Image (cartoon, rainbow, N blue to C red; front, side):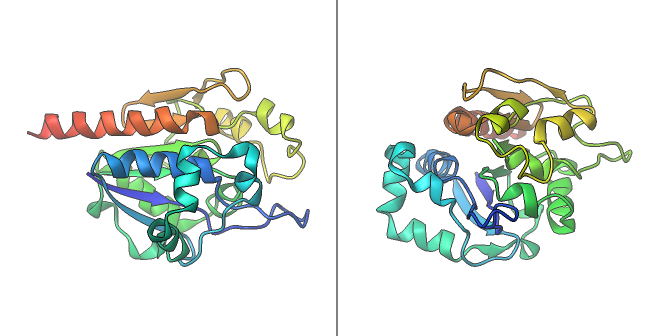
Length: 232
């Protein structure tokens, strides 16, 4: 299975002076889950080069076996320090795209024509699109073949308004992700704050929060294996 990891290039938390980027656990856990299952992974970002890690996600409280593996893995760290520029990749070359969160995606995915074009390509080719936490910010501009919002009528989840408020960033983010997805017609399902939750609606797989990254990766593998069986 060929999987594209789409990570953010954005490292500023609005005008707060705080740094953001991708959330380490939401990258490390799915990355190693898919890598260890034999997937061929390419890591890309809108700007290419060094993908910023949210420094909060490197604090002791947030460490897991996967994040510790990442921090000690020079080869993988080098991959994320030298990401491929997103404009140079094509949906044709992959079976799935996985979009982890962190707050960075809230700024550099919406309004990004390259993100929109690439992910609509995955949709048109009936390939897996998976996104976790704030990663589903990549979905807000997507439209289907009839010009309707891609998320309209889809059952999905993402970092909830309640969770955004719980972390005190509801006034900092450019918009509230749950609210925006609901406005676009999604059937948004919210579990309790920081409770693992993953939804698969066809080939669209979404996870609510960092706690959902491991089951989201498992859902991606299951979808890829099912797709392979169907094609056989």
